[in-house]
Image (cartoon, rainbow, N blue to C red; front, side, top):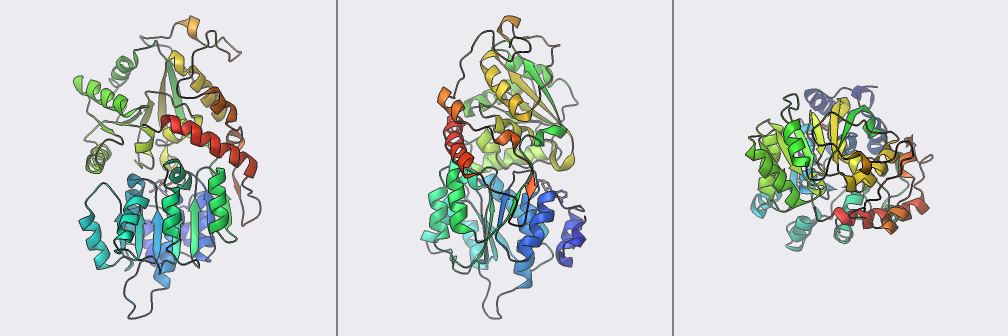
Length: 449
Ligand code: AMP
């Protein structure tokens, strides 16, 4: 299947060609015809599946083909809501790229930067707004944004909105829009509250569930170093002597941890910068830019800051700390191996992270190969006893209580890709509700990052 078989208009095809897109990803192949036909859409899909183009291409086409009546002026006809600034900026860049040969105008409305430029682009008029909820509400309260002409609403990463506490803001924003509109809803997971929102917002949606979390990991080479406690930094320095690691995104559990890794890498002349919630938006953007253009070799990030970051051709992801939520591991390593490229994910694991490793291996359905030839091996007395998967010593699980782990449902690892036009996909309300509680509680543990 090619893009030109999807009834996409020539102005957009020209832009896609310029971006070197030839073949639609599975979610694009299914979403584009449905959205072009005016249907509401529910996509259960993660970053890396091409979901942005899946909603942006048909949205742009519909707006372009149905301009407002002459004399009506430019009005906000489409709103895309994103949980994070980074994701909003990425969507904005994509929307601009796909609409570059149309007369449509887009504006990004997000916090952390001066409001003035955003006010100016609003005064000049925008057809499409890509916004984070907080700044959008500020501007709505100041009567600078009017959503009464919105025809298409996109909610991206809805589960993340819930995690980050934005769901009430989102509901307040939606209340200011006409009830008759096309709604496109994307979420990587479907906890109960999200399911509820879906029911109230979407009318007879086309539902597509794509890229099971366990299979994203398949094309990525994965390795784990079982390390003696306290030697991760030395091992990282050692690893980065290998010049074939052109660019590495290193994940730490905490903001302070991220700063510490940057400081220690800088000491040994490895260029590194950190992005996390304590950094200003400007410094985050500059770190990301430096990393993307090769000026910085290592970007150190926490999970929340890294959410939505899109780096083409990232060669390595390094888990300095293993996440306590196994799905987070899959999200992290999915930063490499984008758009069909291969990549390498290396994880450091100390004794108290062994239970996390076990959970991750269970989710992805395979054992991550261990690199044994290194200077700081974990004493063998502390490892899993062979074959049984049980620990010789039972280390504590930091950051997750027994009840969290007991509540985490098992559905994620067996989730299958299903597509439909309203039939075969059924969000499982029971498991969804369990998952909602579990992911909320468990993710809360790493929230401070
Ligand atoms: P997303 O899941 O929307 O964050 O997209 C992941 C990455 O894939 C982005 O870098 C997109 O620019 C890229 N991408 C999306 N769709 C295609 C496509 N059909 N062909 C090539 N690259 C794509």
